[in-house]
Length: 125
Length: 183
Image 1 (cartoon, rainbow over the protein chains, first blue to last red):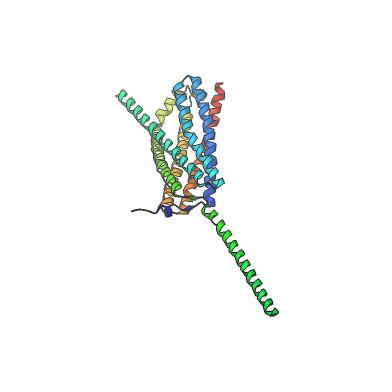
Image 2: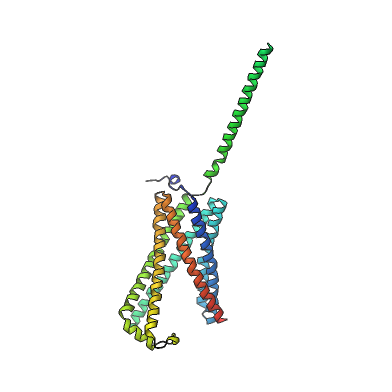
C-alpha cells in the first residue's frame, strides 16, 4: 500500500514546537561546548597519569559525539530563526546521527563489559 | 447634444473610475495572494524532517532500553548490598583506606554508597522516562499527523536535554576541579 507522503508529513510548526526546539537547541549547544571542555580536562588528567591510549580514545569519542549535538543545536536554532526549512532539516538529521552514535557507543560498552565479566567468571572457575 | 456629450463624458469617467477602482481592488487582492505563499513557505515538519525524527525515535528507543538494562543491574546490586548489609559494613570498616577520615565508620560509608546508588538510579530512571516518552509520542505524532502529540514528544526531548545539560555542568565542574588539583 502506498502512502501519499506529501499529505502524511504536513505538521505545522506551531509556536510551542518552535520554542521547544529552540530551547532544546540552546541546551544542546551548552551541553556540547561543556562536553568539549570536559573532554579536554579528562584528556589532560589522563595524559598526566600516563595513560595515553585512554586520553586519545576518550577525546576522539567525545569530539565525535558532541560535534553532532553542536550542529543540531546551531542548525535547528538558525533554521527556526531564519525560517529556513533545509537548515532545520539538517539540524534534525544531526540529532539523529547523535543518538545513533550514542546507541552504538553504549552497545560497544555493554559488549565489552559482558566480555570482561565472562572472562572474570571463567578465570575464577 | 452638448448635454448628451456631457452625460457620455460623465458615464465614461464613471466607468473609467469604477474600472480604475476595480483594477486597484484586483491589484490589492493579487498582492494579498502574492503574500499568502509566505505562509506556505513557513516552517513545518515536512517529509524529510518527519523521517529524520522517526529515525531518531528508533535510536532513542535503543538507548532507553540499554539505560533500562543498566538501571535494572544497578537496582539488583543495590538489593544485594542491602541483603548483605552486615558483611558490607564489616568490609568498609576494615578496608577504609580511601575513606580514612571516616575510620571505623563502616555504617556511615555503607549509607553513603546506598544513597549515591539510589540517586544514580533515580537520575537514570528520569532519563529513561523522558527518552521513552519522546520516542513514543514523536513516533505516534508523526504517523498519526497529530500536532499535540508531536509537541509533547519534542517537549520531552527538551526536558531530557535540560537534565543532561545540568549534569554536564556538574561533571565539567568536577573535571575542572581535578584539572586544577593536578596542575
